[in-house]
Image 1: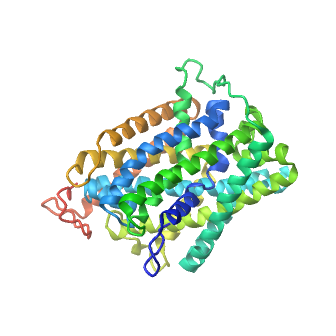
Image 2 (image 1 turned 180 degrees about the vertical axis):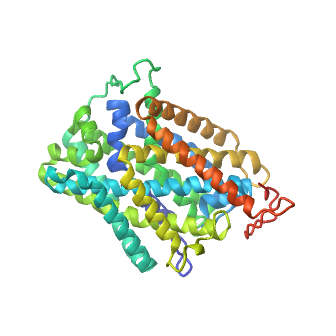
Image 3 (image 1 turned 90 degrees about the horizontal axis):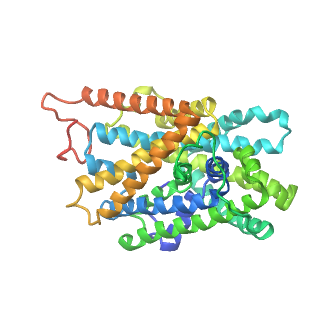
Length: 451
């Protein structure tokens, strides 16, 4: 969520890092750990280190984009600069939007999974209902306005970041370092090359860091952005890596791999019980609830405004056609998140989100290398390495899902095809006889302003 600095001083480096880590250390870590362990066994702490390395290469492109085009438009602005207004920018922007909505659904489902740990097992089937309640609550809070959101954002960020860090450190001290053997073989991967599942698992560990992309929105709000923006992203990623690895090691010390996998939707709460006792489990659940509630509210805020921006840019149909509803982008966003929460479990939600995000991330790097060599000062080798890493991770992840859960691939493919077809048809609807699109954007003279 972008910070409004119109009437306040620009962000310091420390302030930027605080906001960045607050966004990055989100609710996803509460559920992703168990899903990654399902693919790599006791190597899941190392998967977070490897994921940070991949994200480190990816962050380079976002830093360079932000330095050259500081804007609250973020990813949409970057895509527009690379590909110009039209079908390509619209498709990849919508993939980013949908991946954000999927994250909201993932977080809402996580809220349900952890909250139900406070109730008897008879209520286990109500996780999605609690997720829907949270999404409706997020809608109400967003309707009330930015002041309510801003008043809670900093407070909850401090609680969840400090709480998770203390939980990780304390757990590591109590449980000690667990042995890492790397002998685990996930389902249906016996014939695959050694390490293949580990590469695939990085698609999920990357989700734990994807919040770094929001730091790029601070380009116009931070002191000395050409130096501090890059520092903020790197330091934030390093801080998150240390916390994630310590947390993973603590979980590995408290639970066996079969136990982590069995409790993958609430692994942290399950691990806290044998380490700290009943009260430790309650504290973990409390932190998870705070993280999920604040995370959904902030994410709904950001994603609904991204959709509204795309509508104003005429990259998607005008939302004014939805009638006299207040903030139709917000209504559409929450409705889509509710639908995903009802239809899919947490593992599938995370998998679809990872696929969409990686495809969009590849487009960001390729746009920089292919179209902006003269406008942006960068070393092409780094985004090219980022593309290679993204492609390797995505390919491995897609194949693992083909073996173990092909429904994920079917749903993701249908979603991508629908986005491409719908966006292409919409672009044709406002393209004149000369092939020019009347986008209503400040870059309408861009040389790529054709379908």
